[in-house]
Image 1 (tube, helix red, strand yellow):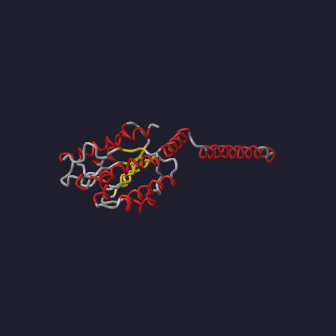
Image 2 (spheres, one colour):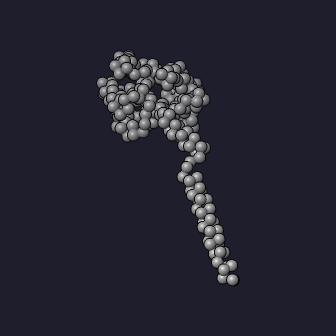
Image 3 (cartoon, one colour):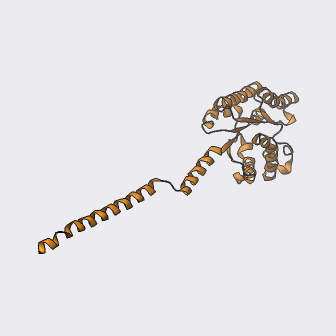
Amino acid sequence: MNSILKYPKFPIMLMCRYFLILVLLISCGGESSKKTEPTNSETTENKTSVETVETNKNILFFGDSLTAGFGLDDANDAFPAIIQSKIDSLGLSYKVINSGVSGETSSGGLGRIEWVLNQKVDVFVLELGANDGLRGIQLKQTRENLQTIINKVRKTYPKASIILAGMQLPPNLGQEYTEEFRTMFNELAETNKVDLIPFLLKDVGGIAELNLGDGIHPNIEGQKIVANNVWEILETVLVR
């Protein structure tokens, strides 16, 4: 009699154990599926991150001490940095890269252009030649160097916009030389169908109160004017 009463309890206990195991397995499976599926917020965050990377574009200023901001205590006072501030204030997705080297000639620029082009370029601003003129380098060589730089940029980044910064020299270097130097930039811009900043130092060059003690490099106030000269042309390129 006791054995008959005890017999039915075994399958009931066994069923309870199976039921408990099943519940645990279902619970674990649910948690696992939750971990493998990204939440809506994660999906949105990842999408936003990808879009930011895709829409961010680079503006490369490739030049000499004028671009580098020679003589300034703070690099943020140089005109490329001022351009960046203007771009940020307008909410444009462009990053300014200052690749200016003090004392750079067109030959020096040609020697480092391939290395500089390892980074993506969407807008290329070429500001070289002033040191060639001040050193009296043959303008045929300067022209060839600038043309080769333009060629290399176009070959590496065919869709990049190119802006050439025009320069002028003091008249004491000789009228013929200074005139040929000035027109060289116009001719290069026309031949290559690139945008031209007619004179980078317009309303700054030769004005003592807008330059450092050397009379060549713009001071903080001069840099602001140079930035405006650049922006007049750059803005038209960015909104195309």
